[in-house]
Length: 334
Ligand code: PHE
Image (tube, rainbow, N blue to C red):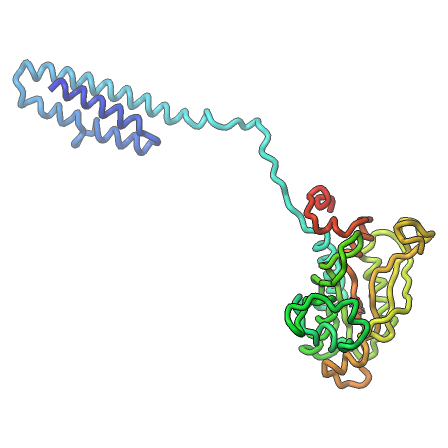
């Protein structure tokens, strides 16, 4: 019988060692000290079947065990309450959390598209994989046109290529929508250019198109001047020079006076005093015809801007490759 109390003590200590919280502690109490079915209660109840000598010994042992268990329970309960105090040092600085940000090119795209949306342009997207029709033919650039040489680029299949500019989006939208329309689009373009400080075979363009009866070159000039003044944080002069694109007539190139030398001529602007920013012009009648617009007096303007070019001029970045290297020392400056 006395051996049994030793066994019981060992069981009790084992159960107590596994206690993790108030609930499991309560479980131990019920199991060993509970009035109904608790081990000790059962022993005390069984005393009546023993002879007087045994009854005295067992009774004393059981009462002793009961006191001991109650004391150990109280200790365990205390221990549970103390636990949380020991773990966290609230005076330590927290781990540094690195917060990301938008890539500078994404920032320029969003700022530019946002500007044009404010003046009534609608944002559109077009595919990066294009057909020759959208990338060239519909834009008045037939297969034998010399202007194709510069952009006849990455073919995925006969007649299917990575777009070399965002101008095909003009055609796609005009096919779907009737004039008047004002649209803006931005995205990746691909050309067979060797990578150097100012060229990349993958780059980004922003493209705008307005088609509406009565649209003329002064609207083009006004809209682009407003845009450039919005996007560049310094003061400058704008210059429109005659140029050529198969899909616009007349065509122009827009430059701004060099912000580094104030148009005096320096190494940033190749001593010319001006920086070329974009190409533009009045939509060629053949393009309007190609998309099925029949109205005779319909006119429009279009422009295409290099996003990298804007970012480089705006922030004084000397090398286009910096945009694609994912070096956080560069990226975190924006
Ligand atoms: N698509 C031309 C280019 O990539 C730019 C352009 C767009 C010119 C629209 C005129 C009108 O060079």
